[in-house]
Structure formats: structure tokens, C-alpha cells
Length: 352
Image (cartoon, rainbow, N blue to C red; front, side):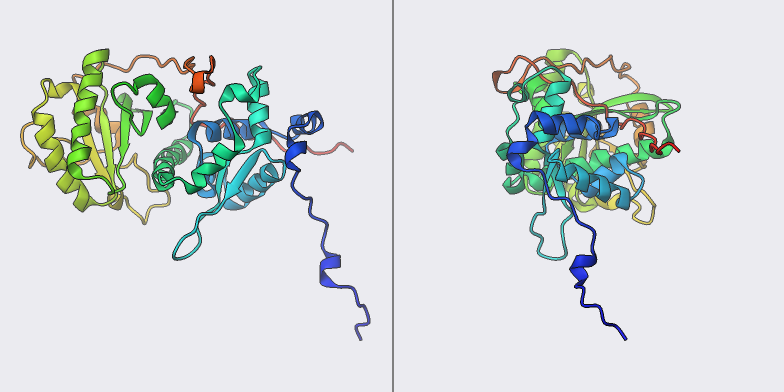
């Protein structure tokens, strides 16, 4: 016969509460984080600072082996106020948790570089404002594109250095090229045929195809100004929109003074093999834009072979990622973080 009257909640282990907002910036809390944050944690904080928001799925693709380990570590970072989170409304189902840089995480990043938090251009209310930004879906879509490439790179292994080697956010691109064009992102992919640098235009279907096509004029001005021909990759939500967009792009591209200075390729999300374990934009879904006729049917290729479509392009020059032009007048800007995480820290076992 059961005689105990102990309530169920009293049998549970005590769960630690979240650090108070004021305590997150205290000296004591920063000292405690020094013994808790791993190199991978600090890399993730830098990635959130660079790209504003990442979902739990994207964080798993970028740095963790399983959803369980992702949830556990993100929960700890959230309790320490290294990251903050929100969950957008979704008409059907539940959206994944979205993570942004938290106040304690910003303090850690600033201290690592010998700065004050204000020198980062960071404010917690501004970081959380992305939750209500009309471009949230676009920002998350760009994150999906690149974290899928990071997952493919981790799958390939890094012994030869193949895979994604650079990922710049829209804000960093704006500081470099904003007087002429503002790409959604800049990336580099290294494969068997060499290294390909590219600008990404991520299309959500909200802009007219005429406006999308006229972006090539701005990229032509950039190529003329820098003397560098950089491929422009356009990612569309459906193959039907891609077909219509290619006709508009071909008309504008053919009218450029030097079309070869603006190499263009397109792909669509519904061309990915959803039966694959990790479908990725690195797959054979890219179709270079025809320079002779909009009806040209070149075979689709992956990022590894895409450079072969433009044999006239020279090898990309080394990137200076230190970008000293700061946000909001600041004199310093953190360098772009590596797209690949550091090796996981081995688990420490207590001694006998």
C-alpha cells in the first residue's frame, strides 16, 4: 500500500534559474563564465554577432553532432545570458527557437578583443528587435543557405581544407561595397577545381523579377570599380520562379557593357534532393546564366564545378577579414569569424 504523500514536483531536481540582467554584466558573472565557455561557445557568440540570428537547427548544422547536445548547450548559454532567444509565431506547427547574442556574450566578445561593449555597436534591445523585423524570414533563409554549406563542409572533413572558407553577413558587405551594391552575403567555397568566391542574392519571391534582374547593373558597376569579376549566385524558392527570373536576368545581362565581368548562376530550393541526409546548396543545382540566349540549357553543376563555367576568372585573392570600418562611427570592428567551429573541447573527467 502506498502511504507517501510526497508531491511529484518535490521529487524533481532543482533547476537553476536564469542569471538576472544586471548580474549578467557583473565582474563575478564574467569570472564564472571564464571557466564555463569553451572555444566553440565563443565562436558561436561571434557568429551570432556577425549574422544577428540563428535557429537551433542552424546551430546544430554548424557546430553540434545531435539535436540533444544542441539543446543542452544552448539552454546553458541561455541561462548564463550569453545568448537570448525567441520563438516566432507560425500559423501551422511550431517554429524553431531563434537565438541572438545576449548581454553576457557581448561582454565576453568585447573583453576578448580588449574593447568595451559599446565599441561593438551592441545593444540587447536592438539584438532582440530582429524578432519583429520584416526581414526576419530573409535573414533566416540566408542563414539556412550557409549553415547547410557548413554542415556539408563538416561532413567532408577539413583535412584538405575543402568546403566553405568564408561567410560575410549583409552588414559587413554593406560596409565594403554599400556605395555600389549590398549583397545578401559573401562567401567562398573551395573544391577540387579550386576556390570560388561569390555574392549571394537570396530571393524570397517578394520582389518583382524586374527589380531582381536590375541588381546586375549594380554588380557591373562594382566590377568596373574594383576590376574584379565576382560571380553572383541567385537562390530562388521554386524552379518556376527561377525560370521566369532567368529570362529577365538574361535580358539585363546581355545589355551590360562587359557581361563577362558579372558571371551569374541560378538555383532553386525545390531542386534539392529532400531524400538525402543533408541536402545542400553545394549539390548539382546551379545553372550558369546563358550569355548568348536565355533558352540555353547548360547542365546543372555543384559549387565544386561551378568555377569551370567561367574559365576566364582568375583565382580569388586573399581576403583581409579585419575590416576596420566600424558600425555607428566606431573605430574598430571584429574580424569575420571562421565559418567552421573549433574542435569540441574534450570532456574533463574528475581525478581519482
